[in-house]
Image 1 (cartoon, one colour):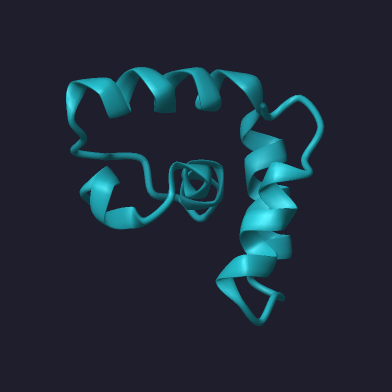
Image 2 (cartoon, helix red, strand yellow):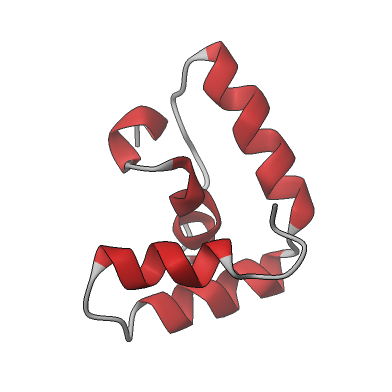
Length: 72
């Protein structure tokens, strides 16, 4: 999946939690994404994905991720 097409960069932990493990991204995006990925464990990303799947809107998912401790 192309990272820029995946939407907001905050989606990265959820996408990884869903099992997506390959991205095509521009160099500036890769650096930002790498920092985000290093902040959460695979278990935490899976838990985020599980929670995100129960939500009704993209805004709810975005807020969930932004409010996740240690993410930013």
